[in-house]
Length: 317
Image (tube, rainbow, N blue to C red; front, side, top):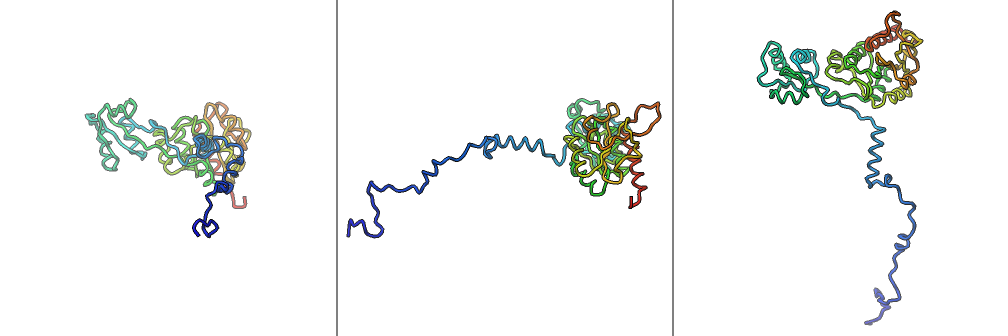
């Protein structure tokens, strides 16, 4: 019947029966616990800042590039030497109107025969890109060096019970290049340098390495002490070269296994914290009238001695 509210499907429009919320309102009034800190809320900018800071503190970039401005070779003789020495050349520049002497003709011939990119620019532009260096109308730019990861270098050396050279405070790029050359010559698996208070792979280092820098991985560690600590945990024996070391390098411990040789600067030697990470300080016996050896010479002597000891060992040793 019309108006029969008891029929199937009928609804009541009375005011005494309100529709239920299904508990929605009650649940919304319940406590949700303390409000998270801004830095713990994923959508908050403080969270992103915290994550970035943690990545900066903990993370290690796979590669680090040489600072801008550190990769120019200028002047006619230095440029020609850089070209013939096999340095990696990104771009060669010659100033418009530069006097064509024999050396410049040699440079132009070399770039043409070896496919080196050559760009002719105004002298003012060449002054600008080289930072005002005395370029004699010609310059070459090296690509920024891409460093290996320190942990990768250590891991690769660990696989073969190899040798890694770590440098502490070696600021002369020629010393760095010479050490890289010696490390490659005596079978080391890599070189680790700190990101601060250290020479980097500039044109001078490339040249002194005589091409070894293209074959041997060089890593830049944000913190050298942390890298040495990691090496120790991985099972490396760490020896530091020090003039006052009581053990001669010929008696250095751990030469039959994974080894890190730490070389300090000629003037200051090894830093205190670096010394504390060394399992032993070893010395190179020299004549009493000589105070110390150049850092690159000391590294070469130590690498040679270690290689000799290793080559003289039998499998049972």
